[in-house]
Length: 113
Length: 115
Image 1 (cartoon, each protein chain N blue to C red):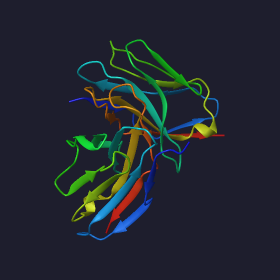
Image 2: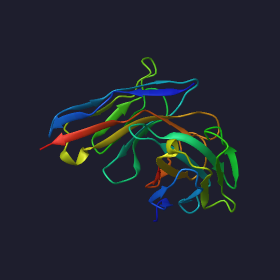
Image 3: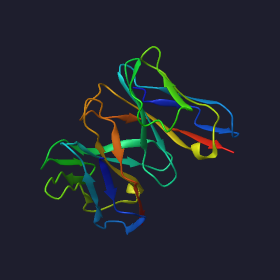
Image 4: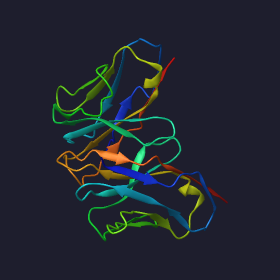
């Protein structure tokens, strides 16, 4: 079945460092890909998405490109801030008409001043 | 506008008891999803509603779990004879329509602890 694998954390970076969180997927068909973020004490929020191959999703300085050839959707940010400390989840929609999401296990990011 | 709300935010119960968890989706959203998030894991799909009907309940772990959405808005997830392994955060999400590419908006979750 469809699945998502993302790099395990926790990831600890200094402010202004470059961030990459790896995400690869297995899917039949052509899923949409998502990154969700969960800030401390808050619910899951959509960070960005891409709906087809070679699409780039971007938001709040974060980017991810849908790579069909490598089945990847890595999250990147050029300069992280303390406020980016959160848990990041890569996800895909399962296909069909309903669109329920399949999530990775999450990667906890801590950014130190 | 108001987001997805879930009540209670925390629920502590004893093994064998019955619990109900409530979800209020965003007004006008026809699709509603329940997920379960265990510690250190990503959310896992439980059940999906399109309108009033449960269109896919394939994620429910067993027949102790049941969910309803009688008027196509509020949904209740019901768990009978709770077990310690049911302890998790239960998340509800809604989207304007079902299907791919539609953004799902998540509630804050209900943290269920079964003692």
